[in-house]
Image 1 (cartoon, rainbow, N blue to C red):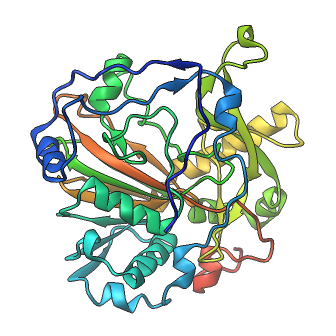
Image 2 (cartoon, rainbow, N blue to C red; image 1 turned 30 degrees about the horizontal axis):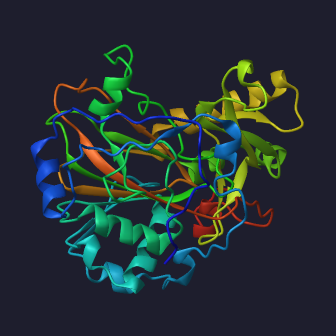
Length: 377
């Protein structure tokens, strides 16, 4: 199991504040059952780094990584035979496993789940009795846990990020015309040297109506492109930036700057060997080697393909106690704020970091590998 990341000392910080929001009752019961200390408030907010240089220094080196799915039985017999049912939610993306508890999976079943996620992009488990500690332990099986330098997390459990729209709304005004920032197609942590692999969101509290999450397939978005267009972008790199901005210690009056790193526009998944489009509108800034006007046109088209084709997406209706595990290397997601905060929604998220993105020119598309590609694909 990979350990959680550690950070260099950060001296220049904005001090955290103690949260005064009332916890939803199902959340409180789950946390108390897990023995989480709530006496100092909830959630824990780490001191926020001010300077770009400090954040660049976090995890700024290559680390070994082995995809758990590459160890799995291709037939996934241990996992699937133990389930009561396996329900595919759409043709190209999304599967629900019925009758299994994530906390009880063996290492073999965990590896097979990683392969299933790599093939189906996002997998759902309802009615989970799952503590944040158990969620964190499962994430450690899949890779190094991402400990965000400024995101709120469960007290005493770095790496269990709190996803609580009410908390977000307390920091920035939200309404129907200005929803919370997670209502936008995006992929997590693309600015990392080794970006996110499997992310696990467990929602313990959900609204009665609304609050669905949508996912889109990067495999299928790439397959929507013509073979000639694919060849044009294969092997190209783009600049990916962080969601948060920081000050340059060497030039603090220059204004906010982002963490930026280069990754391939099209990446190959290490477990499936399939190609996937790897872009997202908020954080893919420009294509390396192209003029801005050229890059904007191409990226704009790629964003549109990835966001607008409903046949390569799935939309999931949450129920309390549901876990979703998805692969950020091959998906984008988008959380609907149509409930507008009228009812609470709360979850904990654990993200396992993966490999340094790579492109294999000889890799097939998903449809080619499954033998379902048409003659013009």
